[in-house]
Image (tube, rainbow, N blue to C red; front, side, top):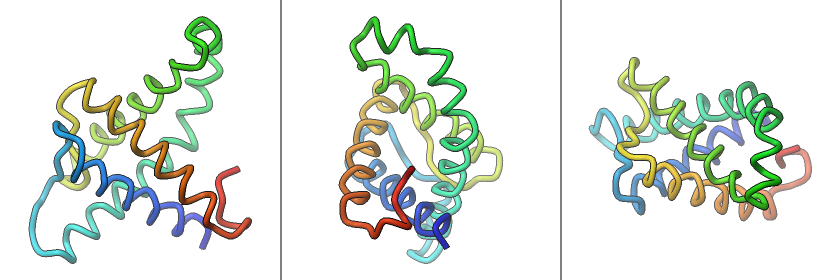
Length: 128
């Protein structure tokens, strides 16, 4: 259940990115049910990418975190968003991220949205 809640939150965050960030668009535009399913699938993929790839990337880039005083966090978030877009492109679900600038803005928006929703969720559904 926890994973489904996190996937739904990621899907809402991706929807915000599609809506607010120029350069991020959604695949397979159809009716509202299809859009929700595509974003939920992309949210699930984003959750898996954040669970498996992000810790490795964070450990490898610790010197860059220290050198940039934590601003490299935005680049890691952008890379996770671009990787999610690349993984979902083959299945024609999810989102398309056209530029790195769009990915950085989208990663920052996703980070803010996840922080905000974590503050409102019960303890068992929060990120650890």
